Amino acid sequence: MDDGCAQAGLMPVEEALQRLLALADGAPLEASERLPLAATDGRVLAETLVAGLDLPPWDNSAMDGYALRLADWQGEPLPVSQRILAGSAPEPLAVGSCARIFTGAPLPAGADCVEMQENVELLADGRVRFLQPLKARQHVRPQGQETRRGEVVLEAGTRLTPLELGLVASLGVAAVTVRRGLRVAVLSTGDELVEPGRTLGPGQIYNSNRQLLIGWLQRLGCEVLDAGILADDLAATRAALAGLHDAELILSTGGVSVGEADFLGAALREEGELALWKLAIKPGKPLTFGHFRGVPVLGLPGNPASTLVTFGLLARPYILRRMGVRQVEPLGFSVPAGFAWSKPGSRREYLRAQVQSGRAVLYPNQSSGVLRSAAWADGLVEVREHSTLSEGEAVRFIPFSELLG
Ligand code: AMP
Ligand code: MG
Image 1: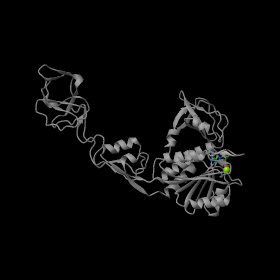
Image 2: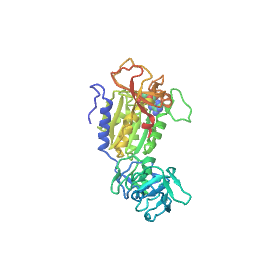
Image 3: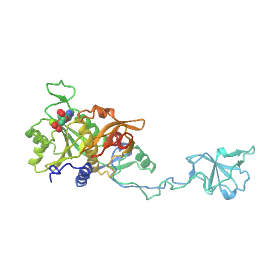
Image 4: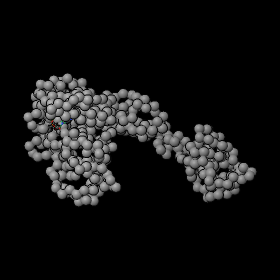
C-alpha cells in the first residue's frame, strides 16, 4: 500500500472517501441472516425484493360513496343494490344500479366509477341522485397502481427503515434476508484516558470517544467489540491488535499524528500494511488505514470533534459500504450562512452549527477538542478549501440526523 500523499500535500476529502469506498468494495461482508420483519429496522437488505402480488390487488374505492357503471347512468337516480365494506367480497354490480361503497373496499365487477357521498342526494325512496358530472375511473384506485407482481420493489443494499418495512409488509412478506452487522472493535488510545466513573489523576481526562463511537456504530447496525483503553506503548498496541483477530474492522482513535507517540502506525508498519493520509479536512487531518494480520484497521484522530467529523464523513460510509449499502453519502442542504468567513483555509472545514431562522449559525468555539459544540449543533456546515463567504451566501449543511443513522 502506498503512503498516500504524506509528502505531496493534503489529500482532498473526496479522494479519501473514494479510496476508502474502493477498499470497502474489495472487502465486502458476505454474512447474512433471515429475520422476521420486526427485527430488521436499520439493517441492510441482502436480497432483491420482488413483488409477489399486485398492489393494490384489485381496483378499489378511494372514497366513501357510491360505485356505478358510467354507461348505465343517464342522469337519473339509481337504486342501491349492495353495500360493500372494506374487507368484503362484492357481488357483480346489478345492471342499472349503484353500490354503497367505503374507502378501500373492492370495486364490484362491472363498476368503473365512484362518486363521493358528499356529492349525492339520498332520495326518500332509497335511490341516489348524483349531483355532479361523473368521469370514468374517478375515485378508483386501480389494481397494480403502486406495484405490479414481478417488479423489483427494493434493491439489495437498501437500508431498512420503518418506511421500507411498511412497504415490505404491504407485500405480505414476513421475513427478509439482511446482512449481519460488521464486527467493529473500538480502541481508545492514550495514556491520559480514564473511563467515566473513576477518579481523575494528574494529567488525566475522561475517555469520550469510546462512548461516542460505540453508540454511533450500534446505530449503524454494527456488532461492537469494546476493546477499552490502549496505553501509548508499542508492545501493548501490537498485543491489542493481535487479540482482535475476530474483528472485521478495528477502529481506533488517537495516536495517529506522525509524532513519536504514533504506536498504531508503528505496529501496522511492522506488518508492512500502513497508509497514513494527511487529509485536507478540519477538524481532522491525520488518518491511518492499514491491515493487521488481515484485519482492516482505521485510525481516526483523537480530538473528539475530529473523531466525530472523520467518523461521520469517512468511517461511516466505509463501514456502510462494507455491509453492502450502495447509498452511503449524507444528504446536504444549501442554507444561507449566518456568519462571514474571511480567511480561506487549505483544508475543508466542517463547522458545528445550528440552523436558526433558516440560517447556519456557528458554535463560537470550533476547537477540535470541544465536543460540546457538537452536542449544541444540529449538524455540520461545510466550508470548502480556499474559499471565503459573506453572510447570507449559500453553504452546504449536513444535518447530524443524516450522519447518525
Ligand atoms: P492524539 O491524536 O492521541 O494526539 O490525541 C489528540 C488529542 O485528543 C489529545 O488532546 C488527546 O488527549 C485527545 N484524545 C485522544 N483520545 C481521546 C479520547 N478517547 N477521549 C477524549 N480525548 C481524547
Ligand atoms: Mg494520544
